[in-house]
Amino acid sequence: MRRSHMLVRISYLAGISCLAIAVAMAYRAGILTDSSRMAEAVSSLGPSGPLLFLGIQIVQVIIPILPGGVSCLAGVVMFGSLCGFVLNYIGICIGSIALFLIVRRIGRPLLEHMFSMSLIRRYDSWTSEGRRFEKLFAAAIFFPFAPDDFLCALAGTTKISLGRFSLIIIFGKPVSIALYSLFLETGWKWLLKVV
Image (cartoon, rainbow, N blue to C red; front, top):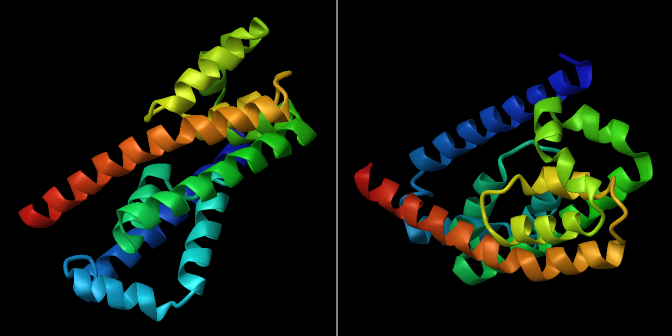
């Protein structure tokens, strides 16, 4: 395994570990089970709370510290359905465009350092036929559960223009984020009832 892949995995595991500790602490404090305590905790952060979350959401697209679903759920749970959706949407769009530009600047070696070769090989055929990539990319971005971060990075290695890429992200992301957030929020509420 390459050293860069090992560093990505270590950062991912460190992020998951920190998240698990934070969730356990919040659960013990009643923040995750009591909506009034959750609102109190969020409001105690003041205006910096949404900005901090937005920053985390941008960074998690570029550097895979947390699974995207976890941060989407956090946005909805912490800030409510509408505000959480808006913060998730803005953060993911900015992060996706930033990742595209970074890979466009540095090139394919960065893609190979960030993602496994098996994942790259699985989607590499998408890039071989000009505009076919744009159609497949748009379809994948529109639906939840696709490897969006990877596909945004892969797009940076193709001839797709920044304008087209940005339009696909801006118009394709709302549906997938809304569906993903709804699915996760429903699952979270069910889990809290069971626990």
